[in-house]
Image (cartoon, rainbow, N blue to C red; front, side, top):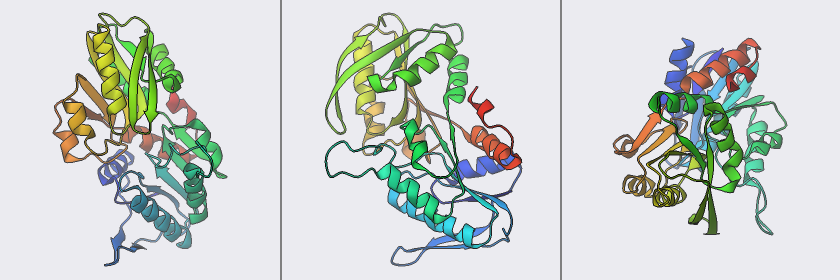
Length: 310
């Protein structure tokens, strides 16, 4: 087994390599003056089972292109099997046609990954589960839920937290959390006027005096999250925190969350953690390196990956 990492999230790749006691394969991934990407693998990988690790977060287009070129380099180096490990799958929110003459970009990226030479994909908390069907190669779709539930149990020991879905579309995910924690569920009903702007309407469920935990797969601008937290506090919630897998946190999201009534936002390191995130008063990061590394080990050993969902 060989591990190779792109530049998008080296700390996560290094943590996964440490868990597997397997050093990252040496490679040159650099850019020419005109920003074209050049890749050279510096070790022999002929006949090897190679896992390439790359999150396709900001700058998404650069990181996707870097991933495609690395996959091509690995395939042309005669690797026996190449698995694209994508902790955060960019363009996942463009999984359908919201109107006429619009693309399904999540499908396009899937086609590009396959065409570049990937034999398999390992990813985490896709925005829409059906994206697995966009690939014509096997996809191992992991969930961060066990990691986040464990953290909730450690930090809410002796309390009775309430799981809250920030919108109707996230109810299935929130119900899974609530079932694992054996607690109640509430839903934030909101109306989105346009992309990136949300208006909270009302709360379905009684949250008065409860420690509320919002759960979701992506936090981007933070607007929905902050509005939901404010609505919950107005309805009498004792505290409001959020557990979200992918901390995209674009634009002024960190500033917005820091200034909000949100007591704590917990995200994973599926996306490289920026300095302003580390310094934020109410944002905490938990690692999913052991989860991804264990999945890599099981894929390489040809053993079951599904038990990791428990």
